Image 1 (cartoon, helix red, strand yellow):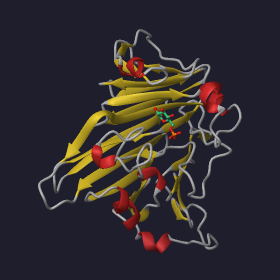
Image 2 (cartoon, rainbow, N blue to C red; image 1 turned 60 degrees about the vertical axis):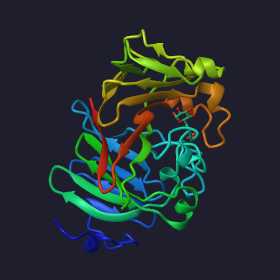
Image 3 (cartoon, rainbow, N blue to C red; image 1 turned 45 degrees about the vertical axis):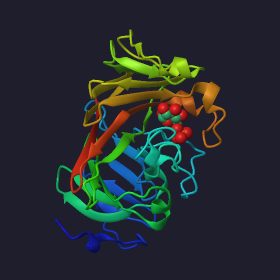
Image 4 (cartoon, rainbow, N blue to C red; image 1 turned 135 degrees about the vertical axis):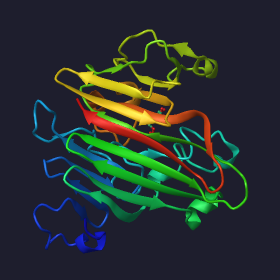
Length: 311
Ligand SMILES: O=P(O)(O)OC[C@H]1O[C@H](O)[C@H](O)[C@@H](O)[C@@H]1O
């Protein structure tokens, strides 16, 4: 264990070779002694790379899709990796969120590096924080504090979002939260399980009535062969995403819903920051609390968590 200040080296020149934690000017790089690594932008607290081997093939391999056209300069939320969605998912529906953009502000604000939480032979973990700034308060006037803890292990990556209601009055803080995982995988092969018999809302429906009409998933494995934007409500919180020769397990807590998204050419070709054919290389499996709002009382903290494991 060491103090984080001892390892901060913005120039990168004097870094010992096996440093588990590096703080560069706009990002943090975590490296596990067995070869896994993760890169975390301060902008949006967006994880833009996670490399890990599997039990069968220990060679660290990229697990997240990042569009070649993604903006990493803070001018736009990142198209890829794991953006953090808070306090609203999609276009705002809560009156307190009315001035916010789609998916809220967490993914488009620059977070503060707070500390190295753990650093041992098994894992390295860092914490970023975000609190009200004048620009946030101008559009979202609530007392809150966010902490984001990212933990890298040999075959796993965990993300924990801590939402604290810092208000001194008794009001609950109501919000939605989601981890927008862009999983690097052949989109024509992936299957997500188990979602059979779970109720979902299909956002690709062209009418409002169609979008609001709950469907029930009949497939034992959900594919994204066509343009898919489905919000599963009350999902099992534990999923397997598999394809030929690979797979990831996602375990979550306090995130009762999951969104499966792939824009295919139909919607993907209209996105300025999506590389051509990018939609063939990922599936978004996004655990969140997005149907309705969760809440946290004054002085309390809510923690939403996911663990991604290479299968
Ligand atoms: O383009 P963005 O704002 O990053 O959103 C990308 C996608 O996020 C989620 O998956 C939503 O369900 C989609 O409706 C949305 O298109």
